[in-house]
Image (cartoon, one colour):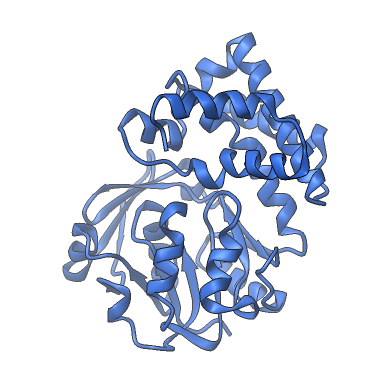
Length: 314
């Protein structure tokens, strides 16, 4: 049994998780940081707008801040803040998890296991990755991606690094997400999936240098070559870390996604274009740091990161 689920992070993706869980009748609470969005949900329903479909509404229980959550009251805590906020957010929620509960960070990138295990302990931590797509449109309303609206998004969770909770707890969480219409699975080798997503995310910093769409990079022979070389660099670092990531499979996956993305900006590029902080540190920069520690050359990563630093991107 999963019990009470907390979703920490009231942005678009966190709200999408909470909305689906609430609609399925799960005992869930969305925990924010006193935002206008959380305040709106305290007095009215959350509206979910699927592309080309009919909007739906659901009442989502909220806590304005982690201090409003009773100590030890959550059996599951899904952490869906930005990666650069994860450590502070986890620390603020140290009191909320039951003794036999499990905390699951679902951010992109590396190092989330250590940040969460430092707070909750390795035996209460798992690690996950998600393809749920959503954005906050205005307080009280989110939009969701085509795949999420169609039930095609997926959450994978398992043991990785310092995330050492029993995989059976991950299966419980996955079952609750499945029942809410969010595809999910507890997997024994979640590290391979996370590294594969890192390879795919090579497009994020690359497209952020010229601040262009995925299609602009992919339709350029030079851009396509650089993107594929970045994937190969990620795979080389993964191998140095002992992760069994297949280069051909990683390239095939990335090519298929990039070719089908079209004239859309990555979320990182959108942040750069709007002068916001990015999740670069836990993604391409983390790959470069590990590459240096293993003596693995990653020249394209080094150049892209240097150009972004020159532009003041964090």
